Image 1 (cartoon, one colour):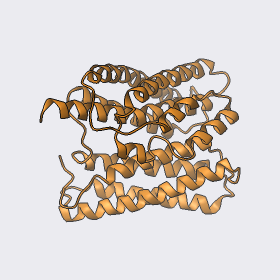
Image 2 (cartoon, one colour):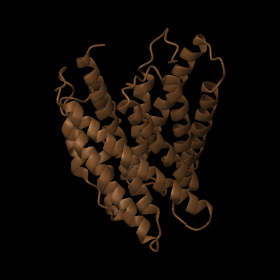
Image 3 (cartoon, rainbow, N blue to C red):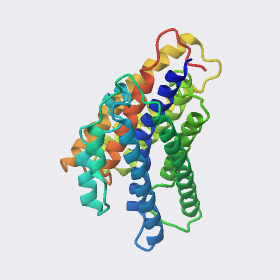
Image 4 (spheres, rainbow, N blue to C red):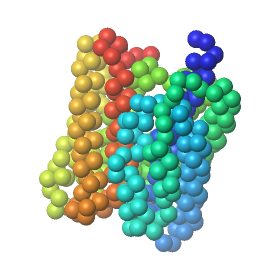
Length: 314
């Protein structure tokens, strides 16, 4: 491979990742901040600092991404959706936590890669990756510490212990991909598709479980649907973990995952709209459901990279 495509791959993969994951991380900080009790002001302040630091990562990524980001990423709905801006404004109103919506507006204005990547951009991206690695490492440690405090009954929050485990694993996912990039192991979703499917099937299933628990008990039909999705993704995860998965089965499982993820994305999109319209009884914020919708959209794009005849194994 020539040096120019390698630079392009590195830059696009890195910036596409930050545009998605830096936003996910900053929202984890918002959810944690909203979940702490008044006495834990120190943890509230630390979460606020992480939110602001990931805003800086996202801001830098946006600046570098104009005319550089991948067109399929910009169109996927994984960065922002039609409800993200409204969800941010409503969640800020409900929680009192400031959310930098100007970054959402900037992300909506991004233009796709024009086919040429400036050679001098690589050093900027390498610096951004290293900065994000250090920040994501610190944030993962913070999440692990809070989980430890909660499980030892030293701390009470409005989030489930399993949610802290969930957001911790997502921070580790971010770190894993960043370190591959910094080591020149370019991330091709087709190469590690099986690994990605196992990870995201578990994430999708957990999203459904959390929604089922945060819905008001009177929302019986939506609770049932959420639990059905949780069981569906649990079964898919077990299938993907099966030893000696034959090529013929892999293609079928891809289609099953696509079908399930499309359905859960529609469920999340509908839930976000209902919350914004104040037509859903729950403890859910619109930003939380929009957040999970963007993760589903990310997974959909990954699944759509598969082509018949490809085994999905690197």
